[in-house]
Structure formats: structure tokens, C-alpha cells
Picture (cartoon, rainbow, N blue to C red):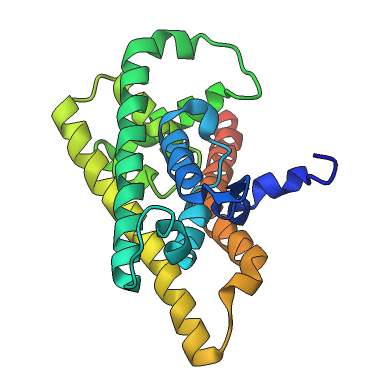
Length: 232
């Protein structure tokens, strides 16, 4: 543990290539992270979009832990399906947790693992977009962690929630995993660029893109707050 670099925890590639006693466990770690990031309020800090994109790049290595498949398409399809299922289960747990502990969460004090402001932001996001918020939220960091919890708190109809839950999970998993897989092949074939050698830039790029909505929303709120006193 002396040589362990804690900054590795911020790199999705660390989880994908993780081994225990020489045995690869990346696929299990990826699935658990997807479950935690979409269903446990303490999982908001975990990598999401970048993890899925990189999982697409490493789809063959990840799936080989479970099956031996020689088809890239089959590998990426299996991986996307497993991730979608993990996302569905995660959101379902979040919904159940919200339905059972909504009052407690709104009265809970902030800790390192829990920030009430994220819950409030997710509620506002949910109220603005309705059921579609479950789909939109899946592609927005932090919000996707709290959206199913808020859906449970406001007692969204279970059948309606599960419909949006399944649709959003499938869209999120298949779009990002397939994008990672095929863009890796495209850049390698057309430009002889191995994306595995530029993981840091990929992660930073995805983080920048996915956080833009949060930044814009924050700026909009700040602007509104400044204008309100003048209006009064």
C-alpha cells in the first residue's frame, strides 16, 4: 500500500483494470459503481459517463472475465446490457430508498457523503421535467444519483418510474459504451491513434462536457438571485 496513489481513484481506468491476486475483477467493479452511482446518494462522486465510455474501449477485456467471445459486437452488446441492468437496479433501489426515507433525508445535516443541496437541485430538476427527468438525469452527473431518490420521495407512480428507468438505463449504457468501443476502433484504423494512450484527455473531456449543464444551471440561479432584490 506504500506505493498506492490515491489519485488513481479518480481515474475510471483504474477500476476497469483492477485485479485481486492477479485475477481481473474490473467487470464486477464497473457494475457495482454503476449501481452505486445511480442508486446510493453516497455514490454521487463516483465516475459515471467516463467509466462507461472507457468500458466500451475495454469491452473485450471486461467481458472476457465472464465469457470467451471473439466478436467485438457481441462483447460490447453483452457489456452494455449488463451495465443497463445494473443501472435499472440502482435506480430502483434509489426510488425505494427515497420512498422510505424522504422525510429523514430532507432533515438530515450535510456530511461529506451527503449534501442536501444536491437533493434540492434534483427535486427542482424533476419538477421541471416530470417523468422525462429520469431520462435527462441519467446523462447529468450528481443529478442522476438523486433523481430516482426524489422520484420515490414524491411518490411517482411505480409503473411510470420503471418505464423511464428502463428506457434511460438502456439509452445511457448503450450510447456511451458503444461510443467508446467504436470510436476507439475508428481512431485506431483511420488515424492510427490509440485512445488507450490518451485516457487522461478523454476523461477530462467527458467530465467537462457533462458538467456544462450543472455550471450553466448554477450561473442561471446566481443571476436570478441577484435580480430578485432589484425586482422587489
